[in-house]
Image 1 (cartoon, rainbow, N blue to C red):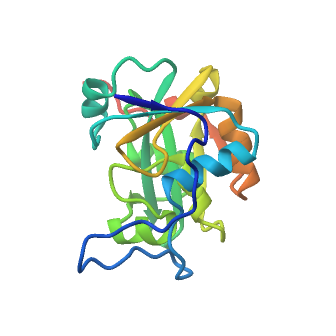
Image 2: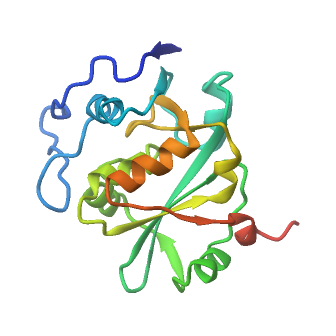
Image 3: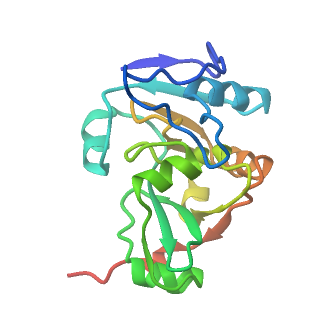
Length: 200
C-alpha cells in the first residue's frame, strides 16, 4: 500500500486508454477529470487529504480485506435513477443495509434502479467500483443529486475513492460537504438508517 500526500503530482492530463479503446467522455463531450487533477483541485480549495494506493477494489467486502487499516468512516456508493430519468448518487456508511424501495420513498423519488455503466460514465466520469461522492466534479450541469448519509458527518474522517478504485482518499467530513457545495452539488443530508432493510 502506497501513501501519497495531499495533491502530490496533481496534473490535468487526459486518462490513458488501451489501444483501440474509445476514450471516455462526459455528457458534454469533454473527458472526465483524472484522479491526480481531482486531488489538485482539492488542494487548491484548501482541503487537506491523504491518499493510499492499493489493489483495485470492487465491493465493500474486497475493500475491508484489501484496504488495510485506514482510520475514519468508510463508504458505499449507489448510482441510482428513477423511471423519469432523474439521477441520484447516494453515499452511505459501508455497513448500512439499504433497501431501494424504502430509499425511493425517503427521497421522494419513486421506484429506483441502478444506473447503467454507460450512464455512470456519461454523468459522473467513473466506472463501476470507483463510484465516489467526489465524482460530482464531473457533473457541471448538476444533473445528479448528491445524497449523504447523516451518519458520515459523525465521522472525523471519511474515506472515498478519488475517481479510481485503486486508491482511497481520506478527508474531513465537513470538507466533503464543502467540496460538494463548491462544485454545485450541495448535498442532501439524510438519515439513511430509515432506508435500512428489515433484519432477517
